[in-house]
Amino acid sequence: MAKPKVLMTRKIPVEGFEIVRGCSDLEVWEGDGSVPRRIIIEKIPDKEGLFCLLTDEIDAELLDRAPRLRVISTMAVGCDHIDVQECTRRGIPVGHTPDVLTESTADFAFALLMTAARRVVEAVDYVKAGRWETWSPTLFLGRDIHRATIGIVGFGRIGRAMARRATGFGMRVLVFHHEPIKSDAEFGVRVQPGDLDFVLKDSDFLTLHVPLTPETYHLIGEKELQRMKKTAVLINTARGSVVDSKALYQALRDGGIAYAALDVMEPEPIHMDEPLLSLPNCLIAPHIASASVATRAQMAVMAAENLKAGLQGERLPHCANPEVYRTR
Ligand code: DGY
Image (cartoon, rainbow, N blue to C red; front, side, top):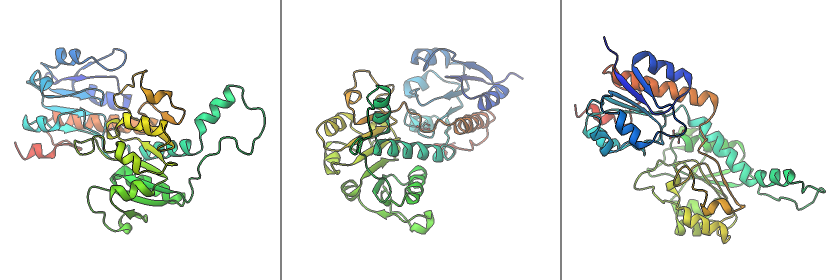
């Protein structure tokens, strides 16, 4: 029997690739970088499965070209690049990769926090530039992390993983979450929940862990940045558009806050004329918070298993739109 046709929009770690290859008649975009949208549109009409990445925008226009599509699987936890509602309306389950990247993402967010607090990038650049002439009592003074206050915006899996790390560093942990937080004991860490204003005003480090939705778009803008301490550090490993980057640029340039460490940008990839790139107090990484060898392999396998289940007409193990099964 002929295997179902699948389009994969980029080569993925081999552990997941082999699963997809084994269960489908696979076509893979082999080009450099992300697949141009016109290529997906050209190749999608006869495909029953789509394996995509967060760099691919999957919207109604594209779905209109995909009459045979039965499953979409993205190798990401965040599905803001997919019109999930539209997929549900069309009866297409969308697979994603929650849980497996939680700890690696929190590791990296904490690495950004520490790098920013102790000015690691500036110091390393200074040495490489041959400017290290003597030990100085005032060279690259940074901020202590231990006993500082961290504000966690979004207390889902990654936010809670950040709270555990912060607790290990003896930090006071403030949390803003869109729903009431149950007892501390449930998460094994002591946190102080509060509204966004409280968290903004009291935090030395503010770290963002919310999905991108219409409600969180530019959640941190001019007004919110003005509420923060002038010494505060902002860490974003969520989605670039959660922060208004123009407002952030002004706050960093004018001393409204001290530092920003960003793993995500609006848009991605960054434009080289992005003003934030010109600031010494802004560190930008290329969306790599989940990029450990083990985690990316697990993400690839999870996404592959989702796709396979969809092709076989089974319920996806990790479905971003479980309501799709109710509308069938
Ligand atoms: C995701 O999965 O949504 C991350 O941003 C990339 O790992």
